[in-house]
Image (cartoon, rainbow, N blue to C red; front, side, top):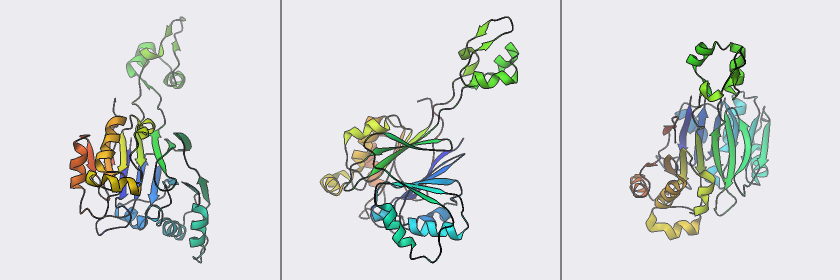
Amino acid sequence: MRFELILLGTSGGVPTTTRNCSAAMLRTDTTDVLIDCGEGTQRQLMLAGLGMGKVSHILLTHLHGDHFFGLPGLLSSLGLNGRTAPLSITSPQHLRPRLSAMLEMDKYDLPFEVTFHTFHATSLEPLHISGDLEILAFPLRHRIPTNGYLLREKPREANIRKDAIAQYDIPWPAIRDIKAGGNYQLPDGKVIPNDQLTTPPPPPRSYAHCSDTIYFPELTNFISGTDLLYHEATFLQDMAEDASLKGHSTAEQAATIARDAGVGQLVMGHFSTRYENGAAHEQEARTIFSNSHAGDDLWRIEVPFTSR
């Protein structure tokens, strides 16, 4: 079962010749979710071989241009390409008037419904259900209202043991109740407990997206135990003071959050254009949290099932 992150843009502020502005897509077997939509995102989608057909939700972390200036062009292209399925866009306040003004310059009306959800999280709060995903939001600390997002699989049913089906001659109509947690009663009245009939399902996989934010230890409360964490790392630690003043984090701080939250893997992005590549960020982060990676545009990161 797929649970895959594709990084579409890892540059902070402005694009470079090798990095696009912020965007990422999380893909599962039933749904895709686009998170942020910096300038040029629709081209990055094409380069990655991705479509928007399974995307019913776009999540914007905040309304700095490098996180949403690609949205008007993307919506317009979707309309020109014949999309009719409705689309939900969640963001902190003020997106709708800004976006409407830009779309009015186009001579074509969008042929699909766009629903705007204005939301600024103050704790870990549920937002949407999309296919097999639960979508939650939590607060980040930036210069303007900013959401982080937690996307996790809905819990699966238990797996029924084939040997138990044969041993107890369980009819197919009873299997649904057993997988949902029920016991099974034999014709002689004996009850077979559910844990003798099933094996536990794999734990739900999860992904947390932490875009622009200063370092604050309380963030770990929202993302504890997450399998995959994306965390901005605009600067290296020698610029920690600048990072704080500008509402950003360093690679060392991102790794500290990953370590203290007990996540499975850290991937960093939103790098300042002063850095040619992310090698130093990766090196700095790994001194704190060994499973740290400096992301690149068009990276694909598959999250396997785990027993963590």
